[in-house]
Length: 213
Image (cartoon, rainbow, N blue to C red):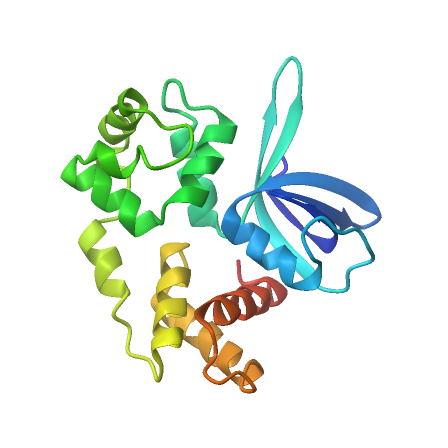
């Protein structure tokens, strides 16, 4: 089982990343958050010698006709992926769609409130699949109220607060998210004001480099 990879991004193509790990190129299908780690160093669709290392938490799927490696920005994302693929009728690709198409707080809220309509907005999710997800994920996700409360972490700017919220939704601890965003704010000090997306990407890069996750 390949559970974690750290390496240099060589190529990005839609939601697939080619990661150079010690001279071996791993082709990894990634979540939207994991893609955000890779894209700052390379434009989507490009190939080249990257310089920034990133860390992906991975899940290896072996079938009779294929072997696929899936990568995630945090352990929380990977744990959710593993819960999703245990649901009848949900394969790896569809699970990746869910993770990339809805935030963990919104997913937790949909399950808690039993609102399948929130899930049917995701590509590939019909009413029956949404209802099955709600039934089988009940009691297996973090409390929605706690996740929403974590969004209200005090911050010097709205963009930073939103960036911290995004990191918490990915499974990072509030204190860890606040520290990463504070460092990202220093790095993006030239932006007026710093964009939320820029802060999230900078914070994720710093967390990946530190190897904290």
